[in-house]
Length: 186
Image 1: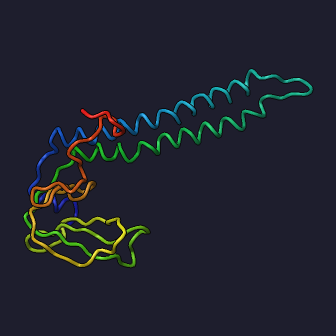
Image 2: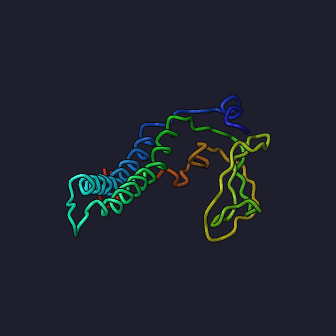
Image 3: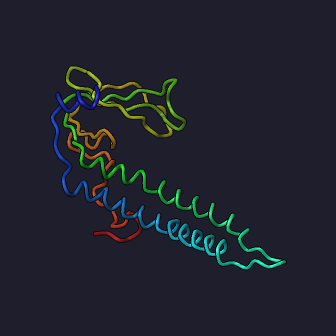
């Protein structure tokens, strides 16, 4: 099914506040990790600029030459900070998309010729007519076998299957540390 077909034919519900809070906490933790390369980018950029405009220029020293080391370094650290935030921002944006509820089937199958490295197969949600509503690559050690089972499913296009027969799959943990790290529980 295409996203438009899913929205037209499947039951949808909005994300609950507690579900969205888990994604926000994960994003906050990643923002805190991205602060370090962002600060380094600013410091390297400032240092490169200062060396290029205010450094010594005499017969034996030319400080501007060091700016060609710091300015590209600043760009690399800035790109790294942005890359760290792409996934969490995408996940947070997806919390404003619907969660679909399907009384149908869950299907697993093994890898195929198009599987990415590290994938052990695919997990799919099928409607009651056994039409594929959505499918995601799975990761794990053991190859998935072909299996189809009836189930009541909740899923999101980005996050995968959230619940099978009312039991969480771990896509959204029950409790999540405040910053996604350590003992900082709510």
